[in-house]
Length: 273
Picture 1 (tube, rainbow, N blue to C red):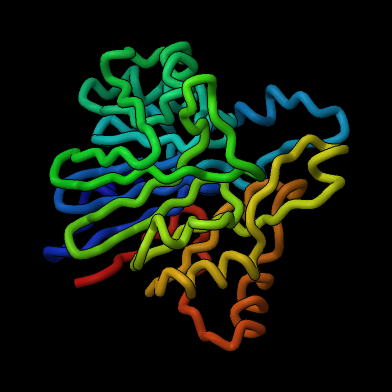
Picture 2: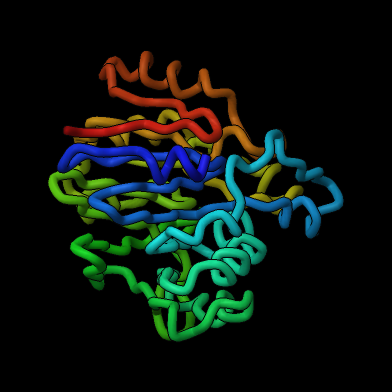
């Protein structure tokens, strides 16, 4: 997969999206490589704290952290291990001297504890725009299932609105829809949204914090006038996933014909141009 990524040639204003599983994506744009929520190990499986739930990956990671020496920016949306993976971050830091790590401000010390030099970590805060290599990043609060802040009022879970030339991409991280979310985002071209939903038993019995479901994701994508909905968080774990068909069903029931694409692990998708 590494050679395919590096050898992919893009026209101006095109970007390539590579699906890594769960909510992990690698984005190639204008000579830059951005990694978001990459979970590329079995850390969750090995450190599962819930005796009621068996966490077992349904498929291996299509690439590993020690193969990512070319990545420029590594984003984490929140501290859960399938989004801020200690093994993956440690491996990238060990082979990649240039990468910068963009994480919510409250988890900077957590990420540093995984072996990432604090000097390479950028503390992201909601509403404070970052400019990195010609890419504009707007961190947006993520409600997982609620909005949570630390003692300083900083959100510990974020989504990222990325402006990549003429394309606006929003990666929601783990998030439920809340009042004002669509207004903060404005119009986006690509909406990457979780669809695994939430329920009483997963939260209270299995300690699984949930997200928006397929219907909510479709409605949000429509509200954002998204050209493409990319569902996430649906396929890696049997205990916290949903059938891919639920998204198609939600689109059909909405009557909107919202364009969407269901990724396969390791798949490349070229957008724009």
